[in-house]
Image (cartoon, one colour):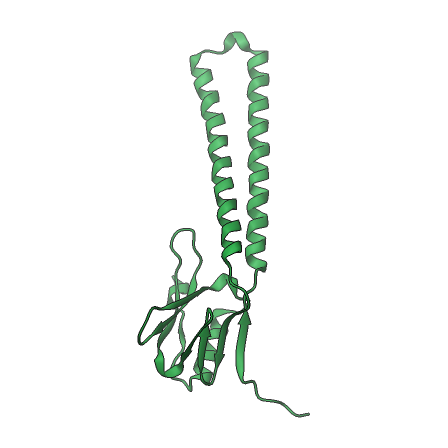
Length: 176
């Protein structure tokens, strides 16, 4: 049996996780909508059954329940729209390519001599962790880790192997 050497690690954009996220958020919208309808039906039935006992306090309490259900529904709709927008903005083709000559990240090639650092960066509120490549000159390049189907530790080991031990991926931000 003969083996051919592996010349590079090429990782394509993988929409599966984002598609699952959109699906989960769509289910959440449906469940919040059902919850709102059930709440409204129960409150109307309670009002029809015990109309004479309803005072201003009961009506305010009912308004709070309905308002809370509406707020949860609006939050779910906003989260679903954000997930759909994130899926629509996802890149196509190769997200990352690590080889003996350098790194290609998000369509930009950087030779190893111009790589200052590679690290995982934690996401701000509502954003996922990203792989960030800092160049010696120029803007850093980033790709969200949830858009690639490779584990961060694999990226670290591959970068160390192909850069002859000069560079790795700092994964400290993922431990926090």
